[in-house]
Picture (tube, rainbow, N blue to C red):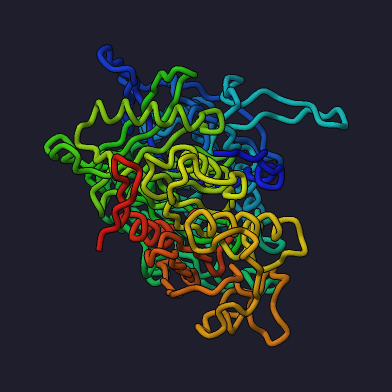
Length: 620
């Protein structure tokens, strides 16, 4: 195998996708095994914490409750932002008492994050306090490399102008959960539920930001609010943001508030709890913990190229899977990874369970990728093991193979002929590297949103590596036939290398991009069906340049649960008559992992197994 130098085009812009969900972790030693296992979703034996007073950029006072947990801050890409709006002004003492009595301290402890108690700028809550929501959000960072030991924040830094930049608390803005009571609950319903305009991460000028989920206790508002009504008239593309549902827990709410959420939430959760004796958040521990477990923690938001949308996430318990975080000492260093085992793995026969390695995107995390990609859902539905590797940029493919040997020794149920790899963005490059350097082990791969096949002149042993590749149409990692720019050139070369390695074409010279390669199929005839945002290659007749530029043997369109998102999959047969190559493009999608891709990728990958002599078996 000859390995080429990795192009800077493929490694310089991959810090995307830091969205995740998870829980508290507690360490237990395994003396007999090289890996150290860590259980997920545990709570510290004794809860305590410290409250620090601060001031928001808006001038409002807040109090941050920081749990006294060794796990605080280690899951910044997964921990939620917990914001509290009270019925009156908090003090340091009342904030701590409320955190401990309400169950919020328990949630913060197991999630590894902070609770922010916000006071109004004046004596009462008014519309002018709506800016507090984004001001709190701006105080958080999902950096997994920071140390959050300065009153619960990362260390302060100094800007170019000499000004001090306050360090952030650890959490992801994809999981903002708001808890409110009394007049604070009325304020949240009337001013935050419908959304707050703020700069978008990836699309347009602004997005309509609203909490991922709400808990409202004893609200008294009788205002009738259409939560889907347009809040910002000047931005037509916010229509989807405005329609986004808001999972909510309403305790002792008025008919107007309960009705507003019930009529708005057609596909998500609205938990109505009436006749509760709770007079404050401090006395609502049962309602808060049950509402959090049943509704709130299972929702997160995306702002990744098509406006802000909502995504459901299931716990390992709901999926009947066992989730643990592990540490393995390889010859070259420690590997941290999350593993997801079917609940019945111990009773499975030897060599019966496939295994998929997952590699996250830059700036993200292993737990992040496990949930946002949908691999845990697919693993549960199809009964296989998923292993998501942390900080894999410092882990070589040889170490992954070493870890695989350890896992096979630990779990005889693993089918050694059905080992697969998947990755997003930066992880796409690692999944490709593993399979190309160990093509006698990996049966198939699913790289997404980063073409790395051009980094190799061939696989290590010359074996075919079945590949299901996908790019979001609005990601800078789409091919789009734009060979006039560096991204397009790099991806065309990479795709040509893949087609050659998999026996679709004889040499890379046989590949010449054709923008009308598949016009007979008609799937790219109307560019508007694929979204026109940021596209630079709509042809004169209004059609979309063929994403791959080479004639496919079959093209299939698969719809997803996300409105407007679909996967258009082109299948290419090799010279032996089998199909080892599937190239997919996601409409209305940005640089993001998508469940619809994972589902279809597994359907394609799972038909291949790698024999001991390196050859492939293709199932019917």
